[in-house]
Image (cartoon, rainbow, N blue to C red):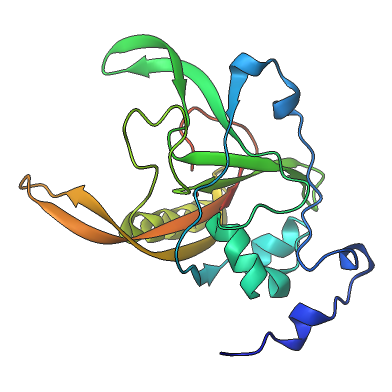
Amino acid sequence: MAEPSIDCLFPTHAYLEAMTVHFPFEHTYAALPANFFARVVPTPVASPRLIKLNRPLAIHLGLDPDRLACPEGTEILAGKRVPEGADPIAMAYAGHQFGHFVPQLGDGRAILLGEVIDADGIRRDIQLKGSGPTPFSRRGDGRAALGPVLREYIVSEAMATLGIPTTRSLAAVVTGESVMRETASGSRRSDATRVPGWSSRTRRSVATWCTAW
């Protein structure tokens, strides 16, 4: 078994001295009344493996990319480990679905860990997508297949480069597990699952993976 890198063992930044992977979380959304969200923990996965880390975005969010790439960081990005200071919730919202207004919807496979302030002073949500079911999943498995995650990563980074406001992907992680998904022909196939992380500027009714809004 490979030994952790030297960067995993010896922090180089003062604010990281207390732990290996540090998220300076705030929780303004979780301070809202209880009907705005449901508390839920990510479902642990079998064997997480980092396949893509957005290092420039990590630095912009005040996170250390070397520590996120360590085994502990990968487990956090996959939802296998909840980081210190996180308050995991699935956000509730209302909106139109199938042509009708629905007063009670929510994130069925997205879990907000907390908020951080980026290098521009903007508040960003750090969210896992595909990290397991929530009270809003409506019998879904709360997981996500690898292909759509990679498409979201590519498209969101293209939009960000073009100056279009967008959710961005912090990382994509395969879980070591598979999910069943229907194909266009109606048959079912088994796909590798992944958990993406995001950050975003504003909260939206459609969530995006570990992400930064």
